[in-house]
Length: 416
Image (cartoon, rainbow, N blue to C red):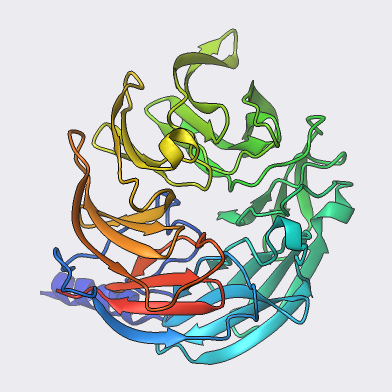
């Protein structure tokens, strides 16, 4: 009996403590970066017109504002947007009401290269981290008070890239990881509490790119991998040592899609070269990348690729004008490509379904992943029409679907 009481007390302490919340989505693509929601009890078919719209909030910035998704923790929601040529961090409650905002420096306003914010804020306990398109990396308390700030471009002698920095910050333990692509560090680890440099990987001779890093373990070694202008590279998380590098070029140095790692293989894809799967092997104490297959059809641009039960589901870019497609992870063969009515877009996953958001006209689809056919269960359109593409990735958290479209944020009820 005492053991039962002790166990019950432990559970109450865990679940009632302010640092714990079952419905958290603390960074871009969720708690583990795999873009999968743990939510259950969701609608399996949507009513005509879509799930119930709980609220719609305007004023996430002004005019053309941005493409940042949302992060959530302990009943608060965070995103960013442009206002008065400044990059603003917004904190909202779960009713869509603004709690506070913070000016994080100059905004990305270049009209020819899609003005607006890019990165999604990262939450770590009582702290929040934001990285602007101009390289301002800021740590705030969860209440919006500045703890520290660095400009990563200036500090590491880096040049910005054509469409502005878009990486979302990754936290691992007591460290923060970022890829400024500078002469004083292509990839760096900082102390997340102070912002001080722990280590810096020597310059690769190329600028950074747009994707966020991934972290995986291989044997006793913890590895961080990401893209740079001309391909991908991986470093030792302990000391920043360069472990491997692979060239995968794009016409405009656009490697936007986050790398995918599974079963000792890496996948890289971009919109002009397509996809390459690489096997990691050991040779004389070094990690060697060996190409296993290529698929030029799989030309994803904006991080819309997911591995489910041995098959890749993705949104193509140029291939067939942008479609939803399925590719065999083992051999790279295209199983099908369909869905030209909605074209390219981004998506997330929950309880066996893909939630697809088209970049054109803000169409939302519920897709059952099937390696044999394109299987759309339900669809609806957002209530507003837009001239700008919809690039912010959808988020499912707390049985709610959050969709950002420029200056507006929508919240839909998915509870069954």
